[in-house]
Length: 397
Image (cartoon, rainbow, N blue to C red; front, side):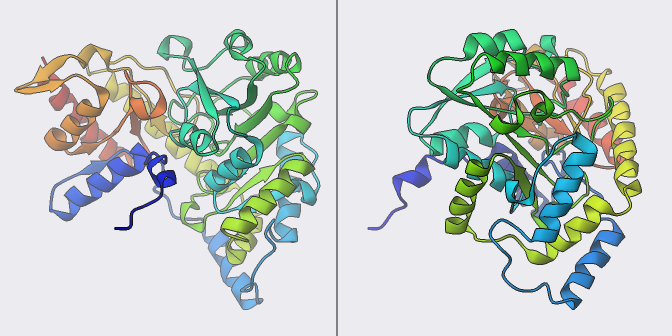
């Protein structure tokens, strides 16, 4: 009989999506579930962006776009990168894709050959290792736990690089930890990379707009880094445009050309209407973005305040994104009634079944002693969720 190819078995399902799917199934069964597992703003897309989409349709932007993206949108991206990030790019240095995730897999498949090593600092976004594996590469992990504020150091990077290292992938602000690298920290990392010119960088900056500690800094802005960095960003998180599926990559011409070829094979161009709406997002009224950032900051402060009442949790104050990533080692190896809690995965399923709260195990992010809790929801829901969590954790002895 027929069966799926071996290639399919090599793809690891995102644990974030798996937990969200399970929570949705329980909701459909009538269970009272609060999902704090998915990384999606609960806000609707700002009205002026939606209006721009309507105007684009009326103006006839309903045909196949170029694989690399519509020129007016790529020009807007170039202006954004120059004005906000001090990065100079031409439209030919930009490719628009179906979300930042699409941009990253395009880049990984365009850079990595079988056997190449890729350094991935942990905690990391769940899909990085699977992407590297799919490309035939080998993931090499650097660990940075809560004691390091979940940020790898330049010294750790220097020790990890070998002659086989081809790529470094990291995010700032980071999913899942919310850690944000400072100018000085990125400068030190860039200086290490100057000693190793064979290492390319994918800088995942999708959470750029959700930053609580000052202006965003891109590693591509440091001397010698622009030509060896793929800057990946998009509109999903900062502009509450997850469903519009717009991401982009800025990088050297050879990489953009390769990504164009890759994307042309898989999906061709990205939604033309979303791209025109993207111009309004980048160049229109930015107050909704700031309002959302302030709302997330208020939620962060409240959830941290509430989590302090749960004994044994260790966590850092996240400086960006909308996640808390507590170390739950204190509870691992204990039991809730007859249920042995010997892993973060079992803890998350216990919390789902007992408290009706969907979180994600840190194992998916390279930190098996942690869980990820999203606070991309309103204060009332956060308060209700943490009250349930507190009761559930109290039963673990």
